[in-house]
Image (cartoon, rainbow, N blue to C red; front, top):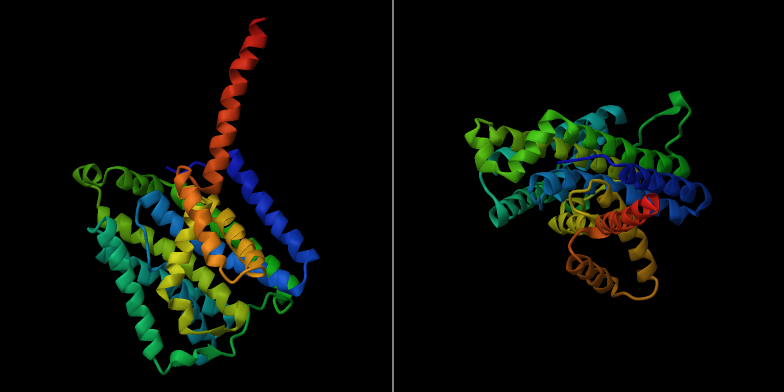
Length: 327
């Protein structure tokens, strides 16, 4: 069950403020890294929502992300719609597909669920790759960004777009936290703990799973719409299944079932990848070793390890404080 602790709030705010400061004082390439972090963090939050709290380990969120990006492009470029309408289309398309995947796979578990989501992801990839109207393997270009000039924000500016992306992380986190703290979220977590018992109590398990996957998909759609605006170009590479695997690595690295851990994992992944790739082309191996160490250390991830360390320190300090009081 999800609990918003003071430590989670502190870590999240520290990351958001740090990224904004880095954006305002960094170079053009630094701002690009910040946007990359934001997109990956939002997608990781959406994955952790169903994987960490519902046990639904997904390999199709990369496809849902790409579907959101393509929905944005289709409305914006093919239909000539405004970017605001395109964002809504991205969220709706991602929610609809996510709900469908959740409904169809609701009775599968473990490896069978993972493979089913992978199959759905591959299906979307093939459909987009073979679609001439969506540009096929050439993709689509000429996308435009949201017009927020009414509130004095120019998203054509690299700095302002990067800050906007960081704020989207905070908004996505709040939405996911509210969902998980609601009665719906508690029931969804209960299904993860004991699905058979919840079904015996009369809970429509498939509806909860489908809706949770759909809501998670809508958050992935936000990441897709942001990615489409970032490059103003979409291609089938956005839908490839290996991206789903990368997002799962980020979630595990940061801390599965913590919600804030995936944000931390995205920051570490993007900046570490950048630094290591400047030294060697074998940065994948370094990331792999780091992931192995994280899993072997207990599988709590970076945030989970930090949480455990602080809890141990507090436990050691409590007896010492009690002894001084008695004296």
